[in-house]
Amino acid sequence: MRKFKTILISLVLFSYAPFGFACEVCKSNQPKMLEDITHGQGPQGNVDFLITWTAAILVGFTLIFSVKFLVMPKENRPDHIKNIILE
Image 1: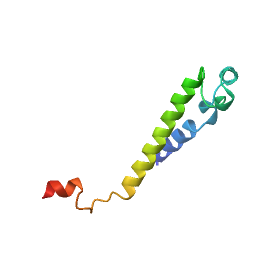
Image 2: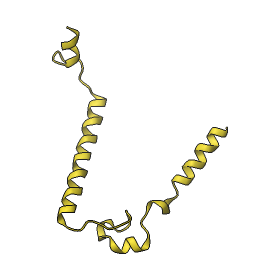
Image 3: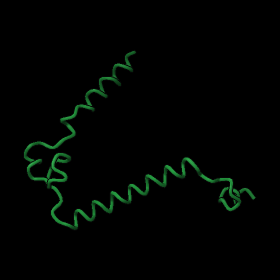
Image 4: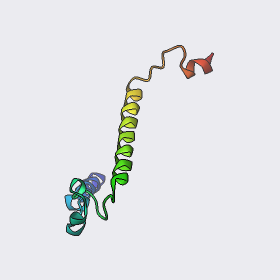
């Protein structure tokens, strides 16, 4: 029961919304698209946006392929590395 209480209190404290959003000063310095997401200075130019979107696309592809290969690993094919080693 004590462990359950600890987990519940931790979840409540970490899920408190204002900790995850930007303050008023940071919100006014951010570009319109990112104004309530992060603290600090936002992207300074088009190159920063290009880098951010490229990274987001790469992370998206990585997520898609990792889920795909976890769900359907296709280890039954004769040219799979596992079969080459076992033979």
